[in-house]
Structure formats: C-alpha cells, structure tokens
Length: 173
Image (cartoon, rainbow, N blue to C red; front, side, top):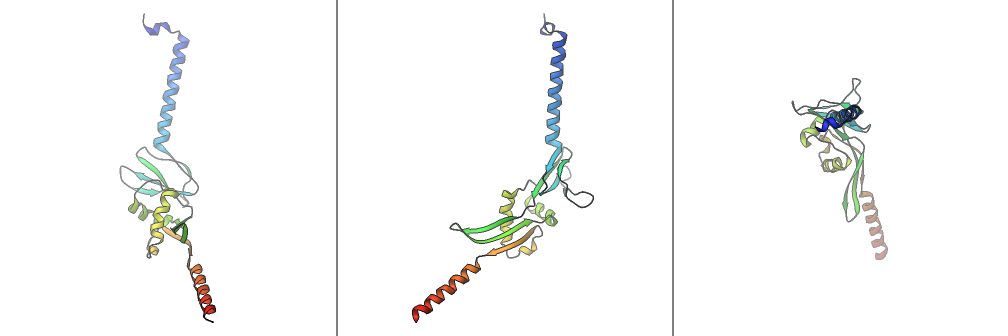
C-alpha cells in the first residue's frame, strides 16, 4: 500500500489547496521584492536599468516626482534619494565651528549618480557626501547641492576680540 492511498479525498483536496496557497504567496512575495518599489513623499525616486545601464528619475507627466508604490521590470531597480534639508557641521572638541543647512537638488541628479553611483541615499549616507561638497570653496559648481543657510562662528569671534581689547584698555588706564 502506498502512502497516497491512506488519505481520503477531502484530505487530498485540503493538501492541494494549502500547497496552491503557499505557491501563490511565494510568487507574490517574489513579485513584490523584484518588481515593486516604494517612494516616500520626501524622496526622489529613480530607476537603474541593469540591461541598458540607464538611470532615470521617476517623474509624472506633469513634471512632479512619483510617490508611493512604483512598478518596475525585474531587471530594473528602484532607488531613492532623500530631499529633506539637513544640517552639516564642522565640529572640534564638541563645539560647532561652522554649520550649514543643505539639501539635495534634483536638477543635479545625473551628475550625482555619475559621481557616486546608484543606490539608496538616505539622510545618514547623504549627509556625509553633502558635507564634503558644502565646505568646498567651489560649491557653486555642484548642481546637486543647495546651501539654504550658513551659520559661521565669526560673530562670537568678533565679540570676544572686542571684549579682550576693552579689558586691555581698562588695565592700561
């Protein structure tokens, strides 16, 4: 007697149905992982086609950036770049010497991807990259970087110099 003969017809149908459900769930999971990406409302989404090597930002017909779930072919990866402003600072001995509020400019997307490659750029990764460009004297040449505000420590330096001069003048008298 084989093992299949021990099962009743209802048990065979139940096993077949459960097997079918497992295959469908596995197929949907593979489809979701390989073909669907998600872009948050504060991110610039872009695709990288592994066959042609092209990178293109995800833009709607009206010129706005695509948000939410995005379908892509299995050989096309969906990546994102964080567009929120962030503060980059130069520190010494736990004191901020200089701070800038910077953000990624989508107009320079192609230059950025050519220089740094494809991938997901969240604030942790992007902060270090933009820090190096924000303090470069020729930062106006980087079309992917926008410096929104700059805070220098010059004000405190001039105040301390004026206090020192005043103290010296008082001691001389």
